Image (cartoon, rainbow, N blue to C red; front, side, top):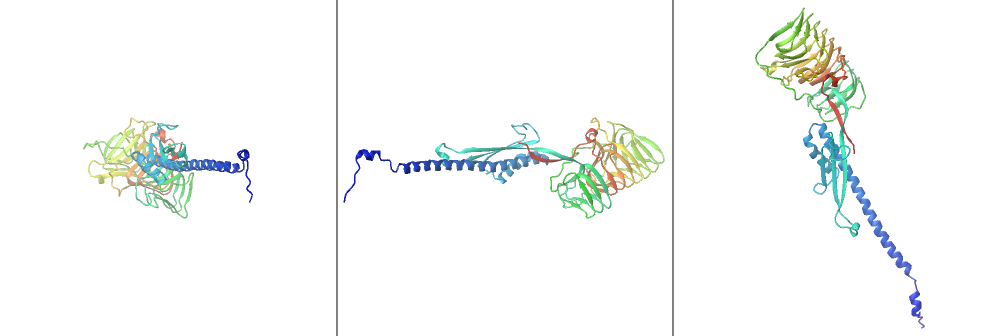
Length: 430
């Protein structure tokens, strides 16, 4: 057998097999770069998931402001961040209200959520040590979506806001709202015709088969309860003095002045009551206007009247308002903040019995300008009643029912000093 041997010089110059070595080194480097790229790409997936958690946290915090529970902003935001992918105990969740930076810095209507995740290294450990901080940030802000001109405060009643029979309700430009969690919190039945900006309820709403309803915006169900705009109103101690007792006006014209009126004010047939500007405290009794009775305010803006219904003795004697068919009532609330109750036309003591009700009944010619506040009792707005011809009517009561033809006007409420009842939503701003 003959063995071929290459001379040493030729062996030194022989490069066969070098391509394989070069290719192996190139593939190894390429695989390393590809692995790093895949790992870095996974960081972007983590960041995208964290962004969803931060968005949910900011929105949840902002909605607590909408619910008037600012003390729960941080807890709600943190809970929603974890529910949407943040890891409790591992990720750092920072909630700032108002935001500490950015376009909405210092804005009391905004909430900032910042989430930082310590991402462990795999292939990138070749280039550095420790974790990689992945941080996301989101800011949500409250945005007004409308204002309610009717708010039923009862939290459980079915039919907290109702339209009965052939009611025609025209509240274009404002919202019908009910804080009840009932599935029929707002019940528009019969052959009623309703035109409104929208509906808002903590429960749900029902539209009868013959109801003709039109809304500028889709109704909102299962929302949070709207805050009582006059929850802070108080009534001063009236004492035992009774300068005006059993005030009855019939077949005469009489001018009344502000003060305490015991056992009600009644204006009967062909009676005319002219109210001077100021606050009228009715201690134990109703404010009644009968058929062919007339009540008007001797005032122009910013002056007006507020009628307060209360009792210094038994709370069952706290009266209501009863305006009957054929009556003529023209009243406006004061808009001047120097008055005791600016923007408020009727204020019933919230200690009143829940079994009572106030009635603005059929055929009455009414021009009411201001807030009608009956937090403990039902209010019925019945018959061919027309309100708001001077600009603004807001009804806040335990429950509210309508029948007949009703027109409520939300215009000019700010100028009238009536407090807003805002419906809001939270939107992402950054």
